[in-house]
Amino acid sequence: MKWFVLAFLLRFLLITVKHHPDADSFFSWGKYLWEKKEFLSFLGESVPDAVRANYPPVYYYLLLFWRGIYELLGNLLWWINVNVSVFPSNLIPLYQTHDIGVAFNKIPIILSDIGCAYVISKILDEISGNSFLKRTAVLLFLFLPATWYNSVIWGQIDSLYALFLLLSYYLLLKDKYLLSVFAMAFSGLVKPIGLFVLPVYLIYFLKKRKIKDLIIGVFASVLLSYILFFPFQPINTLSWSYNFYIGNFQGELNNLVYNALNFWELIFGFKNIPSADFKTLFFTVSVWGKIIFTLFVLIIVIALWKNISKQRLIIASFLCAFAAFLFLPKMHDRYFYTAMIFLPIISCINKKYIVFYLLLSTIHLLNLYRFWWYPKINFIIPVLSNITVIRFIIMINILAFFTILYHFITPRPSFKVK
Image (tube, rainbow, N blue to C red; front, side, top):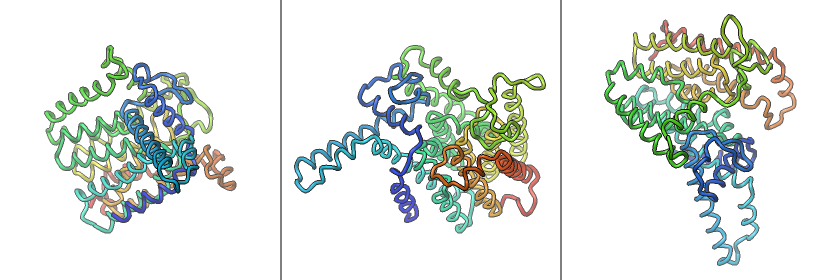
């Protein structure tokens, strides 16, 4: 428990250091919802001082709730200021600044970081008996820079959807199938990125012959979606929310790749290739990306079906998420996060995978750092701006994927699941 507390405190100390422009939009969304109380036409529309509100609804409810906590705390500070003479009054205008408001929004994400680490530890209780490896894996997740750089410095919300995704897997391993589907749906209603693991997840259900739980869970998830989307679109809610969600899942921008160290940047470098327009060998590269991803998914799920276990489920999920990042179109730098949350678990399944965890999390950190350049480290910037260096790093990424995939399909004694 002390490590969880320490990880929270270290993150909390850094919340005012810096934030990505996306966090400004999160602040403006929450402020708008609290002050206007207008849900209708909020999704997909412009909000003052923010980009278009294009996330699924769960995060907006969290922003609304957390803005209420922010206002409540502000009122409490004002009451203390009025009634306690020794209270430093200059804290009031400081608390009301934009930067403090943005930093305040990072607190639920920090808690999600810690929550992810805790759920990872519970998953490891189900699949591994090595207490040293379990402790090492959780500590790596808590303290490796790639995790806290995303949440504390960027101010991004990836650990929030990841928390429910991990919870879904924990419930699945505990044979609580219906609750697992519900948690998976909740993750998708925060951000859809975690749904790249669905093929593997569904195969596990089929193999366990839990079709009834799956069907009931899907219906319950549709009902949940209807309830959550209804305040934003009370007319034709299901059809509108479906179109909104699919559009969100496909991405708003049209370039083939967005600063992601993946296969397409290896091929095209820093060129801005419109994924919908560029054709080669009868198809657009966007279609080719989906074909390649589908082929890898088929390889992974067939191998899992032939030899299924809790440990192999986790490795297959990692591979599926990694394949999506490497080969699907419109990938962002942060989209590796889904694969990364499985890395501490597979590194505990076999200690040899710890090398991959350290390597891939470092590459992910460099990917997040690239083109944002915070903190500014002068000797690193030209290195990561060199396409030859970038292609070398991408080849390491791809080699790691194929190595783990190969050992998943044809496990050898040194890499077999233990």
